[in-house]
Image 1: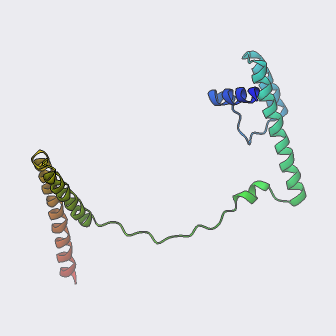
Image 2: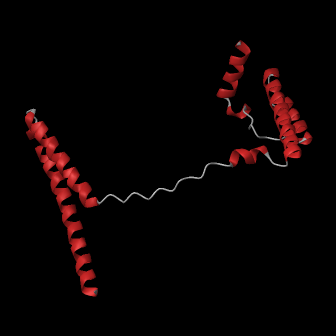
Image 3: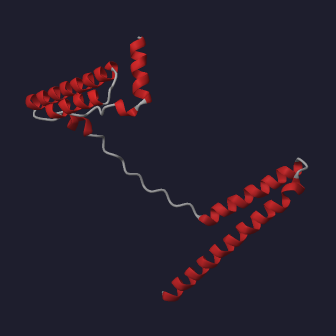
Length: 156
């Protein structure tokens, strides 16, 4: 149990020692890795961990190839088939004018709540400035829509 905890600690602390799960090593690669382990002066535990990982990957690859020869299909292809995704109708984009109306109402409600608590004077200037900014933006949207409607009526 202690060695397992130590191995988890090593693999969590140093991402360098974590090998990819689907890696396949050729004999030349394994030989090169062993030489690199010796040169980098890894502890025997680290060397054993890397060697075991290489062996496990090799065993997985053998199993995969046996399955391909037996069934004619790669097991990875079986996993790839996913249920068809239902396409949903795209939600209509929220109308900016309606959003602004809601924001103005929220700020008015906030100001009313602060006045009820006796803090109205503290927030009144800020909230009224925000409301006037929202009203100006609403006026701009209204002007644009009116112009678009006039142009549409003029072309018909």
